[in-house]
Length: 135
Image 1: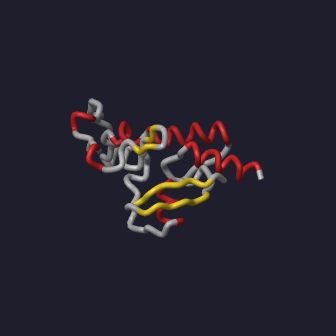
Image 2 (image 1 turned 90 degrees about the horizontal axis):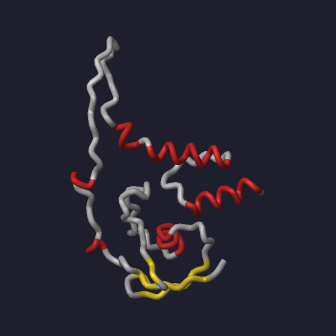
Image 3 (image 1 turned 120 degrees about the horizontal axis):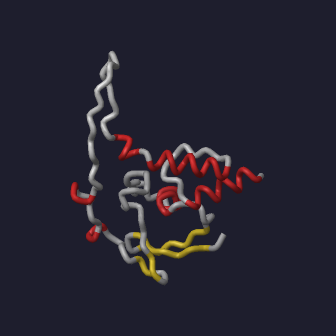
């Protein structure tokens, strides 16, 4: 483990952590700064994304964070399907919204034999799980 140095709220820190640990885990667990919260937890909203260039953080605040608007969502065409189902319950386009994460998790399972039960499944989590599987 290589030590990393960074500044949080004007205070300098140096910690040694495995490469698969998330910044959120380090801030909460290593530094004890439990006021730090997770965004959507899926890695889709961008709140957890930290953009770095040669050691400089390019997005240190939410000032440039763009909340997705209706115009940012792809067009979804709804088609009514009439059946003789006695309950009348039908899926109403959620499949087009929530199908990608389970498909990715299934593909990772097909490739590695490992099921992930929490999102997001990051490359670091895959490497950690592969290392644990190999032990």
